Length: 307
Image (tube, rainbow, N blue to C red; front, side, top):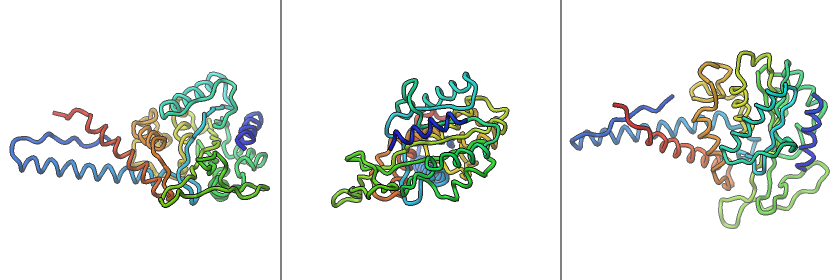
């Protein structure tokens, strides 16, 4: 199935805020108690902030947990001049390595396809009409809703994206959903006696369309980092991220969003570092939240205190 999807992408390409500092406690016990209470309050605020961000941005298909890449990724860029295309591919591949993924060698078949255009909606409609099975493969839980696919084609966003994920039996590597024309797969959904699952959700491909006319004035680093964020995680196009230091705010405030932030990288590393073998999708999201919050607390603790 992966080869068919990759071939479809190739065919399509041919078509076209810092944490508040807490002073060290001094002298008596009352001062010490007050400082500890401040630390606890700060920790709760961070936990809530992390949870809010993940709840806002994460958008897997209904009933599925968050998906991520398992195999090598291969970045393809279409419809852009050579130097710009090479930079985009190189930068997205660089981010992949930072989160533990292995980019493919030159000439690999792309499973991440970035397409430049001067009319994002027209490009999206044309691709869906020509290769609808690439966007809607028919397996349960492999993509977002039909309404989301319509929005992908009709919105006016400078960047739009569409993910396909595949539920896979982690013990056998077999697809764990029925595909059109095939019999139902034989898989165990939970491990014996535990609230764990053998089913994982793998990203299989992502199509990202960049409307270069609407991205006018941005540099290629900003565009590449935005593309990387949505290539490696299932981001909700309607997410409101104004309260967070994130590249996802690029088109609201370009001057304050030069690149992927530490917050963005913390999220991606938590997504790819979490175990994600819980049977409940909400528990899987909670695993990512816990890992991201823990790492953010460690990072804050490592920052020298201000005078």
